[in-house]
Length: 348
Image 1: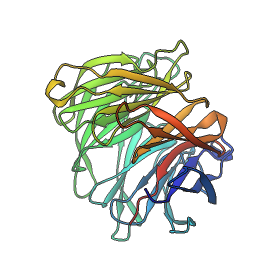
Image 2 (image 1 turned 90 degrees about the horizontal axis):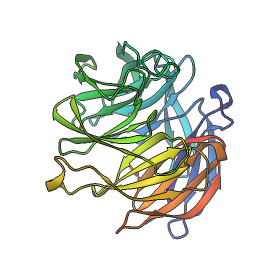
Image 3 (image 1 turned 45 degrees about the vertical axis):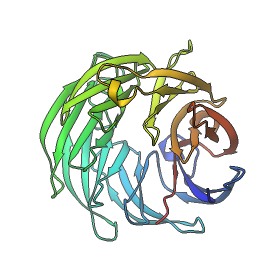
Image 4 (image 1 turned 90 degrees about the vertical axis):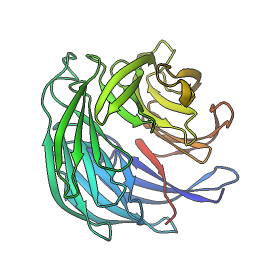
Protein backbone atom coordinates (compact mmCIF):
# COMPACT_ATOMS: atom_id res chain seq x y z
CA UNK A 1 0.00 0.00 0.00
CA UNK A 2 1.41 3.39 -1.01
CA UNK A 3 1.10 6.62 0.93
CA UNK A 4 -2.22 8.30 0.22
CA UNK A 5 -4.28 11.38 0.92
CA UNK A 6 -7.20 11.40 3.34
CA UNK A 7 -9.87 14.12 3.36
CA UNK A 8 -11.99 14.88 6.42
CA UNK A 9 -15.16 16.95 6.23
CA UNK A 10 -16.20 18.86 9.34
CA UNK A 11 -18.92 21.04 10.75
CA UNK A 12 -17.82 24.67 10.77
CA UNK A 13 -18.86 27.45 13.18
CA UNK A 14 -21.71 28.45 10.87
CA UNK A 15 -23.06 24.87 10.93
CA UNK A 16 -22.80 24.13 14.66
CA UNK A 17 -19.19 22.90 14.83
CA UNK A 18 -15.66 24.19 15.19
CA UNK A 19 -13.89 22.59 12.22
CA UNK A 20 -12.34 24.18 9.12
CA UNK A 21 -14.61 22.40 6.63
CA UNK A 22 -12.05 20.31 4.75
CA UNK A 23 -8.84 18.88 6.20
CA UNK A 24 -6.28 16.98 4.11
CA UNK A 25 -3.88 14.44 5.64
CA UNK A 26 -1.16 12.27 4.18
CA UNK A 27 -1.20 8.71 5.53
CA UNK A 28 2.06 6.77 5.74
CA UNK A 29 1.43 3.32 4.32
CA UNK A 30 3.59 1.39 6.78
CA UNK A 31 2.70 3.10 10.06
CA UNK A 32 -0.72 4.56 9.37
CA UNK A 33 0.51 7.86 10.83
CA UNK A 34 -1.29 10.95 9.58
CA UNK A 35 0.43 14.21 8.68
CA UNK A 36 -1.66 17.36 8.41
CA UNK A 37 -1.12 18.95 5.00
CA UNK A 38 -3.79 21.61 4.52
CA UNK A 39 -7.18 22.98 5.47
CA UNK A 40 -9.82 24.62 3.31
CA UNK A 41 -12.75 26.81 4.34
CA UNK A 42 -15.74 24.71 3.23
CA UNK A 43 -18.86 25.63 5.25
CA UNK A 44 -20.75 22.67 6.70
CA UNK A 45 -18.87 20.05 4.67
CA UNK A 46 -20.73 17.06 6.16
CA UNK A 47 -20.62 14.81 3.07
CA UNK A 48 -18.10 14.44 0.23
CA UNK A 49 -18.18 12.46 -3.01
CA UNK A 50 -15.80 12.05 -5.95
CA UNK A 51 -16.27 12.30 -9.68
CA UNK A 52 -15.92 8.80 -11.19
CA UNK A 53 -13.27 9.80 -13.73
CA UNK A 54 -11.94 13.29 -12.97
CA UNK A 55 -9.85 14.70 -10.08
CA UNK A 56 -12.85 16.59 -8.74
CA UNK A 57 -14.72 16.25 -5.47
CA UNK A 58 -18.07 17.59 -4.33
CA UNK A 59 -19.19 18.68 -0.85
CA UNK A 60 -22.55 19.62 0.59
CA UNK A 61 -22.67 22.88 2.51
CA UNK A 62 -25.05 21.88 5.31
CA UNK A 63 -26.47 25.31 6.09
CA UNK A 64 -29.98 26.77 6.33
CA UNK A 65 -29.48 28.01 2.79
CA UNK A 66 -27.72 24.97 1.44
CA UNK A 67 -25.01 24.76 -1.17
CA UNK A 68 -22.87 22.35 -3.14
CA UNK A 69 -19.15 23.02 -3.68
CA UNK A 70 -16.86 21.46 -6.26
CA UNK A 71 -13.21 21.19 -5.21
CA UNK A 72 -9.92 19.58 -6.15
CA UNK A 73 -6.99 18.19 -4.15
CA UNK A 74 -3.54 18.43 -5.75
CA UNK A 75 -1.02 15.56 -5.41
CA UNK A 76 0.77 17.57 -2.71
CA UNK A 77 -2.47 17.80 -0.74
CA UNK A 78 -3.38 21.38 -1.60
CA UNK A 79 -7.18 21.77 -1.85
CA UNK A 80 -8.90 24.37 -4.03
CA UNK A 81 -12.51 25.45 -4.50
CA UNK A 82 -13.62 25.08 -8.13
CA UNK A 83 -17.16 26.41 -7.86
CA UNK A 84 -20.24 26.60 -5.68
CA UNK A 85 -23.99 26.61 -6.34
CA UNK A 86 -27.15 27.07 -4.29
CA UNK A 87 -28.46 23.56 -3.55
CA UNK A 88 -32.13 24.54 -3.73
CA UNK A 89 -33.03 23.57 -0.17
CA UNK A 90 -31.99 23.66 3.48
CA UNK A 91 -29.47 21.48 5.30
CA UNK A 92 -28.19 19.29 2.44
CA UNK A 93 -26.57 16.29 4.15
CA UNK A 94 -25.73 13.85 1.36
CA UNK A 95 -24.87 13.79 -2.32
CA UNK A 96 -24.04 11.16 -4.92
CA UNK A 97 -22.43 11.41 -8.36
CA UNK A 98 -23.86 9.29 -11.17
CA UNK A 99 -21.51 6.63 -12.60
CA UNK A 100 -21.37 8.45 -15.95
CA UNK A 101 -20.24 11.66 -14.24
CA UNK A 102 -23.06 13.72 -15.72
CA UNK A 103 -25.09 14.57 -12.61
CA UNK A 104 -24.94 15.12 -8.85
CA UNK A 105 -28.00 14.25 -6.75
CA UNK A 106 -28.39 16.00 -3.37
CA UNK A 107 -30.55 15.12 -0.33
CA UNK A 108 -31.88 18.00 1.82
CA UNK A 109 -32.55 17.00 5.41
CA UNK A 110 -34.03 20.36 6.38
CA UNK A 111 -36.46 20.92 3.52
CA UNK A 112 -37.17 17.27 2.69
CA UNK A 113 -36.24 17.33 -0.97
CA UNK A 114 -33.82 15.97 -3.55
CA UNK A 115 -32.09 18.11 -6.17
CA UNK A 116 -30.21 17.19 -9.36
CA UNK A 117 -27.37 19.22 -10.88
CA UNK A 118 -25.74 18.82 -14.26
CA UNK A 119 -21.97 18.37 -14.54
CA UNK A 120 -20.00 19.38 -17.63
CA UNK A 121 -17.06 17.54 -19.21
CA UNK A 122 -14.67 19.15 -16.69
CA UNK A 123 -16.80 18.12 -13.73
CA UNK A 124 -17.96 21.69 -13.09
CA UNK A 125 -21.35 22.23 -11.46
CA UNK A 126 -24.00 23.42 -13.88
CA UNK A 127 -27.69 24.23 -13.64
CA UNK A 128 -30.14 22.51 -11.34
CA UNK A 129 -32.17 20.19 -13.55
CA UNK A 130 -34.80 19.08 -11.03
CA UNK A 131 -36.04 19.39 -7.46
CA UNK A 132 -38.32 16.71 -6.00
CA UNK A 133 -40.12 17.82 -2.82
CA UNK A 134 -41.30 15.05 -0.50
CA UNK A 135 -44.39 15.02 1.73
CA UNK A 136 -45.74 13.32 4.84
CA UNK A 137 -44.67 12.70 8.43
CA UNK A 138 -43.98 9.88 10.88
CA UNK A 139 -44.96 8.93 14.45
CA UNK A 140 -41.93 10.46 16.19
CA UNK A 141 -43.15 13.94 17.15
CA UNK A 142 -39.76 15.67 17.27
CA UNK A 143 -37.85 13.93 14.48
CA UNK A 144 -40.62 13.02 12.04
CA UNK A 145 -42.80 16.13 11.93
CA UNK A 146 -42.00 16.47 8.21
CA UNK A 147 -39.95 14.78 5.48
CA UNK A 148 -36.19 14.67 6.13
CA UNK A 149 -34.24 13.32 3.16
CA UNK A 150 -31.07 11.83 4.61
CA UNK A 151 -29.48 10.10 1.61
CA UNK A 152 -29.77 9.44 -2.11
CA UNK A 153 -28.74 5.88 -3.02
CA UNK A 154 -28.12 5.34 -6.73
CA UNK A 155 -28.33 1.95 -8.39
CA UNK A 156 -25.33 0.53 -10.25
CA UNK A 157 -26.25 2.27 -13.51
CA UNK A 158 -27.24 5.57 -11.92
CA UNK A 159 -30.68 5.29 -13.50
CA UNK A 160 -32.60 4.86 -10.23
CA UNK A 161 -32.28 7.32 -7.34
CA UNK A 162 -33.68 6.15 -4.00
CA UNK A 163 -34.20 8.93 -1.46
CA UNK A 164 -33.99 7.71 2.15
CA UNK A 165 -36.54 9.76 4.11
CA UNK A 166 -36.00 9.65 7.86
CA UNK A 167 -39.05 11.85 8.44
CA UNK A 168 -41.68 9.59 6.85
CA UNK A 169 -40.12 6.11 7.14
CA UNK A 170 -40.18 5.88 3.35
CA UNK A 171 -37.83 5.00 0.53
CA UNK A 172 -38.81 7.21 -2.42
CA UNK A 173 -37.37 5.89 -5.68
CA UNK A 174 -37.22 7.92 -8.89
CA UNK A 175 -36.05 7.14 -12.38
CA UNK A 176 -33.24 9.56 -13.20
CA UNK A 177 -33.43 10.54 -16.86
CA UNK A 178 -30.41 11.44 -19.03
CA UNK A 179 -31.66 15.03 -18.82
CA UNK A 180 -31.41 14.99 -15.03
CA UNK A 181 -35.11 14.72 -14.26
CA UNK A 182 -36.57 12.67 -11.38
CA UNK A 183 -39.67 10.87 -12.69
CA UNK A 184 -41.93 7.84 -12.06
CA UNK A 185 -41.83 8.01 -8.27
CA UNK A 186 -42.29 4.75 -6.32
CA UNK A 187 -42.77 4.71 -2.52
CA UNK A 188 -41.72 1.82 -0.26
CA UNK A 189 -42.85 2.02 3.36
CA UNK A 190 -40.64 0.92 6.24
CA UNK A 191 -41.55 0.06 9.85
CA UNK A 192 -43.19 3.06 11.50
CA UNK A 193 -40.83 5.16 13.60
CA UNK A 194 -37.64 3.43 12.48
CA UNK A 195 -36.17 6.62 11.00
CA UNK A 196 -34.18 5.34 7.98
CA UNK A 197 -30.79 6.99 7.52
CA UNK A 198 -28.47 4.98 5.23
CA UNK A 199 -29.27 2.51 2.43
CA UNK A 200 -26.76 0.31 0.61
CA UNK A 201 -27.67 -2.07 -2.20
CA UNK A 202 -25.93 -5.43 -2.02
CA UNK A 203 -25.95 -6.07 -5.77
CA UNK A 204 -27.92 -9.34 -5.56
CA UNK A 205 -31.45 -8.07 -5.06
CA UNK A 206 -30.67 -7.40 -1.41
CA UNK A 207 -30.21 -4.08 0.35
CA UNK A 208 -29.28 -3.09 3.88
CA UNK A 209 -30.47 -0.07 5.83
CA UNK A 210 -29.51 1.63 9.07
CA UNK A 211 -32.48 2.95 11.04
CA UNK A 212 -31.35 5.89 13.16
CA UNK A 213 -34.33 6.16 15.49
CA UNK A 214 -34.53 2.47 16.41
CA UNK A 215 -30.80 1.68 16.12
CA UNK A 216 -31.33 -1.30 13.81
CA UNK A 217 -29.77 -2.86 10.75
CA UNK A 218 -32.66 -3.78 8.45
CA UNK A 219 -32.26 -6.29 5.64
CA UNK A 220 -34.40 -5.59 2.57
CA UNK A 221 -35.32 -7.39 -0.61
CA UNK A 222 -35.75 -5.38 -3.84
CA UNK A 223 -37.74 -7.66 -6.17
CA UNK A 224 -38.34 -4.79 -8.60
CA UNK A 225 -36.51 -1.45 -8.87
CA UNK A 226 -37.58 0.70 -5.92
CA UNK A 227 -39.97 -1.93 -4.50
CA UNK A 228 -38.39 -2.78 -1.14
CA UNK A 229 -39.60 -5.46 1.27
CA UNK A 230 -38.34 -5.98 4.83
CA UNK A 231 -36.65 -9.35 5.40
CA UNK A 232 -35.30 -8.92 8.93
CA UNK A 233 -34.26 -6.33 11.49
CA UNK A 234 -31.57 -6.73 14.16
CA UNK A 235 -30.16 -4.38 16.77
CA UNK A 236 -27.03 -2.63 15.51
CA UNK A 237 -25.53 -2.56 19.00
CA UNK A 238 -25.72 -4.93 21.95
CA UNK A 239 -24.74 -2.28 24.48
CA UNK A 240 -27.22 -0.61 26.89
CA UNK A 241 -26.78 2.96 25.65
CA UNK A 242 -29.41 4.44 23.35
CA UNK A 243 -28.16 4.06 19.80
CA UNK A 244 -28.51 6.60 17.00
CA UNK A 245 -27.18 4.39 14.20
CA UNK A 246 -25.14 6.34 11.68
CA UNK A 247 -22.95 4.99 8.87
CA UNK A 248 -23.39 1.73 6.96
CA UNK A 249 -20.71 0.31 4.65
CA UNK A 250 -20.29 -3.08 2.99
CA UNK A 251 -16.82 -4.58 2.68
CA UNK A 252 -15.45 -4.82 -0.85
CA UNK A 253 -15.66 -8.65 -0.88
CA UNK A 254 -19.28 -8.70 0.31
CA UNK A 255 -18.54 -10.75 3.43
CA UNK A 256 -19.05 -8.07 6.08
CA UNK A 257 -21.19 -5.03 6.80
CA UNK A 258 -20.06 -2.30 9.20
CA UNK A 259 -22.31 0.03 11.22
CA UNK A 260 -21.25 2.93 13.43
CA UNK A 261 -23.28 3.45 16.60
CA UNK A 262 -23.56 6.88 18.18
CA UNK A 263 -24.26 6.66 21.91
CA UNK A 264 -22.63 3.25 22.40
CA UNK A 265 -19.70 4.75 20.39
CA UNK A 266 -18.90 1.45 18.73
CA UNK A 267 -18.54 -0.09 15.30
CA UNK A 268 -20.44 -3.35 14.81
CA UNK A 269 -19.22 -5.91 12.30
CA UNK A 270 -21.94 -8.06 10.70
CA UNK A 271 -21.18 -11.26 8.82
CA UNK A 272 -23.32 -11.33 5.70
CA UNK A 273 -24.80 -14.69 4.71
CA UNK A 274 -23.36 -16.33 1.58
CA UNK A 275 -25.22 -15.49 -1.62
CA UNK A 276 -26.84 -18.92 -1.84
CA UNK A 277 -28.46 -18.44 1.57
CA UNK A 278 -29.41 -14.77 1.36
CA UNK A 279 -33.07 -15.08 0.43
CA UNK A 280 -34.28 -15.49 4.00
CA UNK A 281 -31.12 -15.18 6.09
CA UNK A 282 -30.20 -12.08 8.09
CA UNK A 283 -26.70 -10.81 8.92
CA UNK A 284 -25.18 -12.04 12.16
CA UNK A 285 -23.08 -9.99 14.56
CA UNK A 286 -19.41 -10.94 14.24
CA UNK A 287 -18.26 -8.47 16.87
CA UNK A 288 -18.79 -4.99 18.29
CA UNK A 289 -15.68 -2.82 18.65
CA UNK A 290 -15.54 -0.07 21.27
CA UNK A 291 -13.98 2.88 19.47
CA UNK A 292 -12.97 4.86 22.55
CA UNK A 293 -14.08 8.08 20.86
CA UNK A 294 -17.45 9.78 21.06
CA UNK A 295 -20.14 9.94 18.36
CA UNK A 296 -18.66 8.07 15.37
CA UNK A 297 -20.78 9.74 12.71
CA UNK A 298 -19.07 8.46 9.56
CA UNK A 299 -16.31 6.06 8.60
CA UNK A 300 -14.70 4.84 5.39
CA UNK A 301 -13.42 1.35 4.58
CA UNK A 302 -10.62 1.15 2.03
CA UNK A 303 -7.92 -1.45 1.36
CA UNK A 304 -8.15 -3.26 4.70
CA UNK A 305 -8.30 -0.05 6.72
CA UNK A 306 -11.09 1.83 8.39
CA UNK A 307 -11.10 5.57 9.05
CA UNK A 308 -13.65 6.71 11.65
CA UNK A 309 -14.65 10.33 12.31
CA UNK A 310 -15.60 10.77 15.98
CA UNK A 311 -17.48 14.06 15.96
CA UNK A 312 -17.73 14.85 19.69
CA UNK A 313 -14.16 13.90 20.60
CA UNK A 314 -12.60 15.82 17.69
CA UNK A 315 -10.57 12.87 16.48
CA UNK A 316 -10.04 10.73 13.39
CA UNK A 317 -9.26 7.10 14.24
CA UNK A 318 -7.41 4.80 11.82
CA UNK A 319 -7.99 1.05 12.23
CA UNK A 320 -6.81 -2.16 10.56
CA UNK A 321 -9.43 -4.73 9.59
CA UNK A 322 -8.69 -8.41 10.13
CA UNK A 323 -9.19 -10.08 6.72
CA UNK A 324 -10.56 -13.25 8.31
CA UNK A 325 -12.93 -11.84 10.93
CA UNK A 326 -13.51 -8.30 9.66
CA UNK A 327 -12.86 -6.96 13.15
CA UNK A 328 -10.97 -3.66 13.57
CA UNK A 329 -7.86 -2.88 15.61
CA UNK A 330 -6.74 0.68 16.25
CA UNK A 331 -3.58 1.82 14.49
CA UNK A 332 -3.44 5.60 14.96
CA UNK A 333 -5.51 8.69 15.70
CA UNK A 334 -5.20 12.36 14.91
CA UNK A 335 -6.94 15.48 16.21
CA UNK A 336 -9.37 17.26 13.88
CA UNK A 337 -12.18 19.54 14.99
CA UNK A 338 -15.82 18.41 14.55
CA UNK A 339 -15.11 15.64 12.02
CA UNK A 340 -18.23 14.17 10.42
CA UNK A 341 -16.99 12.62 7.16
CA UNK A 342 -13.82 10.90 5.96
CA UNK A 343 -12.72 9.67 2.54
CA UNK A 344 -9.61 8.48 0.74
CA UNK A 345 -8.67 10.66 -2.22
CA UNK A 346 -8.83 8.44 -5.34
CA UNK A 347 -5.88 8.31 -7.71
CA UNK A 348 -6.68 9.81 -11.10
